[in-house]
Image (cartoon, rainbow, N blue to C red; front, side):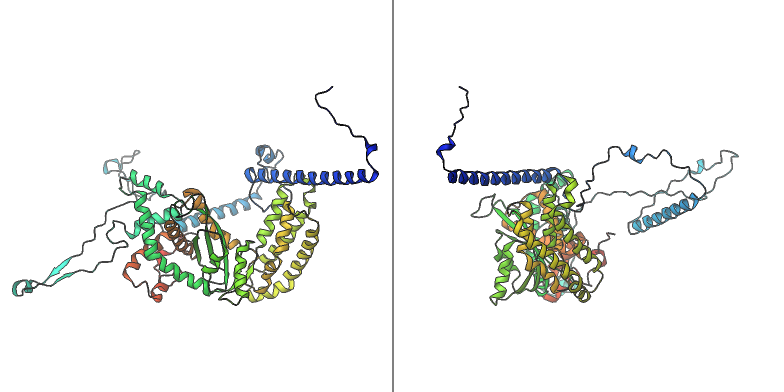
Length: 544
């Protein structure tokens, strides 16, 4: 007898009906097992692609761009003809191009400080080696280099001269003492200046350099500043000076009628009543097309839709979002006659991404372009192509053109989606792609309601990306107070960047001004907004 004993069945003991039922049951189980296996294979391929594949979604035509290891062989052309006189024109064109590039370099370097270092022969060396005569200067040969001068840290002493009256000193009992007025410090009783706080913030929130790395750098320079000092300065400056400007920007954002929103995870270690691994969130809101650029972050311990409802209280207009259902609370408030009147606009970039994720699991590249997922991507790509053609139009003209050109494309797309929804497996990646568009149809169709609206929420994703990049370096926030200070600081910096300002110069200017003005005066705050015409020219970014 073998080790594996096979149990035998006598089919004569079962009726025809019982056998048919068993056959049907086994067929269903087999089909379900095959679908489950197919799903696991798909998930395996997608996870493998996420780990080792490219993240770009641009290439969908089945042409995989592989590294060229035989570049020398592929570029070799044994029968290329030798240059002839006709090539002179091409050489002249390339020479002209070189001159243009040289002129561009001169322009790029024109705003930088210049230091001239001259090398001359001594009087004894100015003798001709041929005849012994006296040499004279003809011209100089110039070579340009970029010289780096590391940031200098100095101790700045502010001396406020005190004056007294000599006559009163001789004749009166009391002598008036008058001090020369001096600017107030950004933090009273601290050695921190406006420039060092602005510099620390810029390094952390623009360059994504954590405080512990900055501390190491200062130690190498012999400066007694630790990360606790820097954290205290950031929190204090954000709370006392940046927060009033942040609230003013928030007022402007909620008064406008087109906005974008997104959110991402944030880990806060020491949050009362919560474990260190509990997920917190950084919400991001920014103005839309046609409004002054404003980017605001808002730290919240949860992803509840009430957070957006509270932050955008009073907002009336269009809000670009992804498929997160937490934003639906804004719709409920609008329908209930609350303070908000919101129309949600969904993102076709997200819809496209679901289809491209499905295509990443396709191994048979020959049938790549015949898949339903490919068809979905092509539908959406045609819409984005049309949007690019309409980008130069005014919002009014774009609205009219969308009704005549984009609307038929949307109707054809959703007609196709409804058919696919009846056929696609819900739990497959393709089923999820179809379900996204099927469930978000009303929000995706909102693009037709106003010419200022956009086909995607990429504006929000670009705005939240600096925070995501920074998080990869500093990983977490230590306290809720620090997370809120970071949200305020990020908001001011990203809004400054969107308005073409130099973040360091702008922060430094704010910290010099705020202690010496009335921060409760809205007109004063307006004069310090990133788009204010009263800002000094040096706050403007020189990025080209």
